[in-house]
Structures are given as C-alpha cells and as structure tokens.
Image (cartoon, rainbow, N blue to C red; front, top):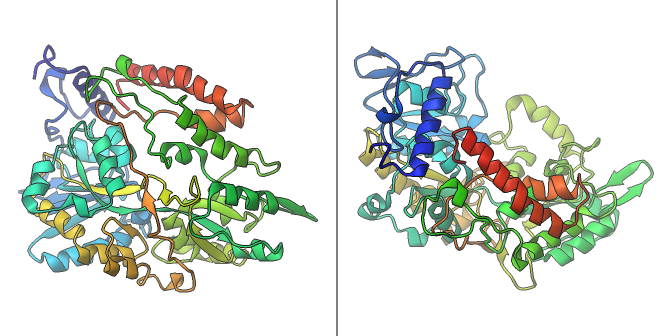
Amino acid sequence: MSEGNMSRRGLLRNGALIGGLAAFGGALQTSPAAASSTSAIPRAAAQSTAGVVDIPNKYNVPFSVADDELFVFAANFKPFELGGNDDGREAHRYFDAVFGDAIRAKFPNIKVKYATWDYPIRYEDIAKAGRVPDLILEDPRLRIDRDLEPLGWTQDITSLIQGAGIDLSTLNVGSVEQIKSRSDGGLYGVPLWIDESLLFYNKKIFDKFGVRYPGVGSTYDDVYKLAQKLTRQVGIDHYKGYMQHPDNYLAMNQLGLYPFVPGSSEQPAPEDVKVNLTSAEWKSVANNLHRFLMIPRNNFTTVDDFFKGDMSFPGHLAMAVNNLSKLNAYALSSYYIEEDDAAQFAEWAKSVQIGVTSMPVLSRGSKTIYQPDTRAAFIPPQSQHKDQALDVVKYLVSEEMQTRISSYGMKAVLKTDAVVNAFGTAIPELAAIDTSAVYWGENAVIKNYQNTEYWDIPLYKVFRQHVLKDGMDVDSSLLVTETQDIPDYIKAQVARGLTW
C-alpha cells in the first residue's frame, strides 16, 4: 500500500513502528514505503546457525529460537515473571506448571520455546530480530493497541477459529466482546482466563468491631455502610474501611459503558475520536464510588493496603476490591509470590484473616460484576507455525485445559461444573478460604463499541487528579476530563507518532 492509499491510522502506526525500531539502536535501515501496519518485521539479527535466530537483549543473555520451534511469548501477567533467575534471566515456572507441561504432553511432536517479557527479551528485541512469536499470551484490553497493533502482529482470526471448531459461544461473553471491541471490526484473539476482581475482607477487623461480614451479592450501598463503620481510630491504630481502584472502577465499569462515541469508521482519524464521560450513566457510576473516597480518613492509597501497601502497618484495611491473582499471593502460594518475598508475606499474613466474596453490585438482585480482566491468545500473521499455534489455542479453551487453569487459581473462560469445582485444587494454600464467590455473577459486557478506535485515555484524571487532588465535584471532573484532558492526550500521542 502506498502512502497515498494508506489510512490515517496506517500512517500513524507505520511511523510509530519505524520510529520505535530506530530508537532500539538503529539496527534497521528502513523507510516509510518499506513497511506497513501488517507486514512482517525485517530481520535484523544474523542467524547463529542454520534455522536458528538469535534475539539479542540488554542483558546480553543468549536467547535463540529455532525455525522448528513453536515460539510462545507471554506478557503482562505478573505470575509469568516469578521465579526468574537474574543471572540466566529465565522465568518459566508458572507457565510450565499451568500450561507448558500440559501442552508438551498433549502435543509431543511440538517443540515449545517459551519466554516471558524481560526474561530476558522484550517486544522490541523480538521485533529487531524478526522472529515473531507464533503464539502470544497477552492482555487484550490494554495491549492490543499499545503493543501488538503497532508492531503489525494482529490479524482477524475469525475464519481460523471457525475452521478449528472453536465455539466462542461457550466462552465468557464479556471476554469475547472485550477482545472484539479492540479488534477493528474483527477478532484478534481468543480469551483464555480472567484475573477476576473480588471483594477481599479482613475477618480480624470485622470480628474486632463486631461487624457482620459482606456476602455474595452485597450492594455498594451495603458495603458503604460497612466502610463507614470500619473506618475508625482505636488508640494509635487507625483502620480504613474500603479501597477500590478508581481508574479500574471506571474503565471496567459494571454498566459496560464505553467512553468512545461511535462514528463512521472502525479506524477514525485521531481528530475524529470523540469521547463521552458526561452522560447520566457515567455520572451515576462515578458518584457511586465518590462517596467512598469522601469518607473521612478513608483516604485512597492503594488496594494493596489490604495486605501491606502504603499504610504504615499491615492488616489495617477492612475491605478492598482486588484481583484473584492477589488472593493466591496473599494465601502464600509459591506460584504467585517470589521465593525471596515469602518470609515477608508470611509476616504480613499474621495481621490478616482472609475472607473473599463477590465484588459489590450496583443494585439489589444484580449479578453483574466488572468487565473481565482477560488474558487471551494471539496468533500473529507472521507466525511460522500457524496450524500448531491454532491447535494449542483450541486445546487451551477445551474443558480439560480450562479445568487445569481453574485448578491453579485463575477464573476460566469456560464455565462448566468440572471447571468450577476444580477451582484452587492445585493451590493447597486456598483450602482454608471460601472461594465459592469466584464464579458467582456475570462479567459486564462492553457495549456500543462498533465504529470506534480504542485509545488508552487518562481516566486517572477523573478521580486521582481532579477529585482527590484538585477537590472538584464529580460532574466537573468528568467534564474537564472529557473536554480537555483526553483531547490533549490524543494530540500529544499523535505528535509522538503513537496511536494509543
């Protein structure tokens, strides 16, 4: 495609790719006419031996991929990074336990070569070397537009999954729609699991003050009353009642609200991107959380205060909405915490008796929780082993593998009795915790995303800047974010040659 025929988004993506690769060390000599948003990245690294591509990295750790290996790369899920050796820069403990060993057993003829982000390679290293992964495990909500699309590593795989017999209708609806909302009218990936959000509560604090625990289906009104009761001072001990990350609350809201206004194209020019944060629904959602932030001395810091975050003492936060992976870490599972951190976590755990239930719902009788924090599988168009990658993806969404994923403490995207009943059975540290709420409810489904383009807009401005720092009311903070902060952000990104 020539520049004269290239879409505005293609030009931006093209420029970002070229500029980014130039910044990686000038190894590539390329021109705008030589690249496109969907072309393979030219190889920059010499092959060390026939059929083997070396991938240089900043750690100078040898890493290579043979042509006959299925190259699997994972990113943006912290457990993948644990157990990494800083000398050898390898981190494969979690992948092998949950996925790798099962894949190798199922497909003994497939040679799996695995790496996770920064152990020892990054996306930019892979792009420079030109050996694109055959299968990528990633966060579709934030990273399709930030990482995969700019590199040209996305493709509509609708026909591939249909041909493979993968039935999307059996998978978590919210996860499928989330991926579609970032896929420019197609489907770039297949959901695999969800790092679900739950309401954690410290039974010790509730017991100390004689307050009843929250339960499945508790509303925000219910939890607000508990938060008021439990934000209190006893001698020098101060207890906060409730923490919920305001950015995630807006981005993954339970009404399925999408901030971008549909237009006439799946790839609008940046100046045509319109945002609406000031509708009655957005105001209702924002005001619902605002009251928690305004409870005197319940200052928002971090949801990690439930265990030990920014507060001076561990175990002084009564309730927090946090991710399922954190539950596994707080329960002291070796799959979810670094070995070097185990002693410190065990010490903090003495101050917390973990209870966990469904996150609050907006109204009595509702079962709608957050939009899912999904991880998905992507097969780049440059994959050298598309058929093998597709076979692996089909296996990963089978009941067999979804049951295995569930057993290791993650919420599967396939919900059957076998999958649900298996939850946490491979994590003995969860045995003493009632985890029946993990599969309760339904994830909110994003709506009205057709003919939009996703940008990673600064929603933090609403609460963390304008409410908590500037002292604005909710309506004003939403208005300023919509009319000033977001347009300024998009302009600044375009000036940098970026499309996210």
